[in-house]
Length: 315
Image (cartoon, rainbow, N blue to C red):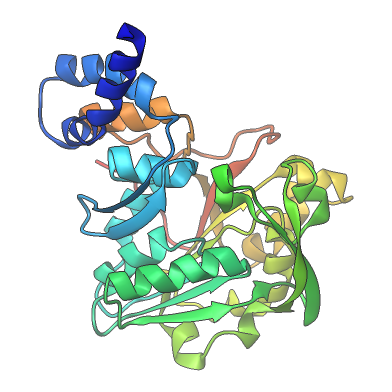
């Protein structure tokens, strides 16, 4: 009976935990809530709709790791989120290849304003429905949504839909999906090189291009290579790089980088820790890890920023 009452109390205090993590309260109180309440709550899935501290209206279910982080801690991928806040300006164009449910697109929509534009591209029907829902929920009038895969040529691809606890892992690469237990979606997905999905003014004003296509980054870069010299000089390309995946397909990191380095782009490593404890530490001090030079040996997945101008870490 007592155990059941404790469980019910912990569940009832879920909104309280969220408020503690969002507010400027003593670190000791946050630690107590994290240890005694959050640890008993976070695995309980529930639907929610919240407004985050960044002003983004978000609907989700806490069984998904992205939704869970946004609900409790109000942010996803703190380093890249804050970097985007510093870089985007009113009137810019943000291109989101692999938008998922729209965290970065919604943030960018607020940053670029009425004179800017956000292009959201995603292949997953499930993620695309959530993307449309979030666009309406946030009244985003500067967003253009494209339901397609990005590839190195026109094609029809099969989509491997990720499981509900990690919906961001949907992929068109069978080799990638087989490692994460994704399910084959029955419908083919139209795929295009990125230049065919963008309009001339979007290319000319592109300030930030985020590419997160769960194993298909090599093909995306192959198809977008003609755009790299057309982007403005201050444009940044943020992209996940998985050396093991590249090597398994007979390629290398150096080959992947070549379209960028041949045009004077420099590569910088931005940290990205998905452990939930990282998000709790963020709630304590909101300190960011600095940008880093590339490691000498690249084996694990890295988040890379390609730029032609020198990038500065958070002060």
